[in-house]
Image (cartoon, rainbow, N blue to C red; front, side, top):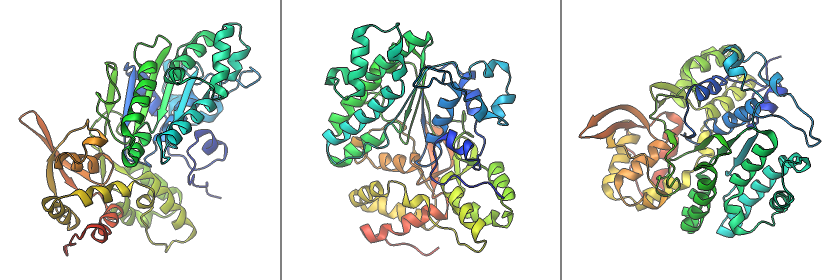
Length: 423
């Protein structure tokens, strides 16, 4: 019996324990340990494995302690995976750190108050996950009282700004090890706030929460942040001089998100559907992270799942149904005729060349044509064909990545009166 495919499963432990098919990305751990950056921000399109990657990091590094204060053992989860062959210097980090793991992907509510409450709910759950520290004599009574207020959602607004820093301090005191902080989809509440009209309020809160935890925090071992866009340093990461940004243009870490060509070949071979190679390439390939060719992992998993049960099943736009197509709609509705003409050329299979600006804010998206193209590129709606430097500016040649993304663009005419050229 073939392994089940992990449709919608983003928890590393669940994938391993259910014996689902797992594309081994554990050498991500090795590359993180080989580099000394204190805070790393990885930007990748939605549904490209960011959440699963952070889950894997948590299970590898975390000193697992049950609610009763007993030691747990996560090492079994990595049996047979590549990181176990990387050497003792990497294995010595397994299970050695307290880990704070916070996802912001649920903060999509229609008002600031509701989105803010959603983030506080996530913080409360993370404090509750670490509540075994309340049994330690290392924390003062005042610290324990504040810890419990976070669990009960009774902390003040000022205390909420310092939540991550306070939690890392408590964990460091109890375990005598600095904490690793993992922040997933940090820009989701910002994107939502931009659409809903409370961007400044949400930016202030996220900046305050991050700055206290990531800047001059003596209890921080390192932090890994994921998102879709690099939000301008002046907007969110003010004064954070220890930040390394790894975007889709970066060569480092390029094979750890999305499925590489060999990984896709192995998957098709495992499920005996190698005859689908050209079809999946046309529909789901086409991305380049650095110089690494990458397939959309969400679409590949869903497609293979269908093909295994019905070899005659046709490819579908799986990613198109999960990504932020509303943003494209908004942008195109604001676009002038020159932008619409270039979009028509892209749909017809042509390329365009644009300068790269990696640090934009949602507020700036409509301020220039270049910001729109950069947004489409960094969020996975366009791919890099080639790049070159001109007068201290990087220019990239852009094209539509594959048939799946082209499907999204073919519905744009319904929104904005574009004319789709025949190819």
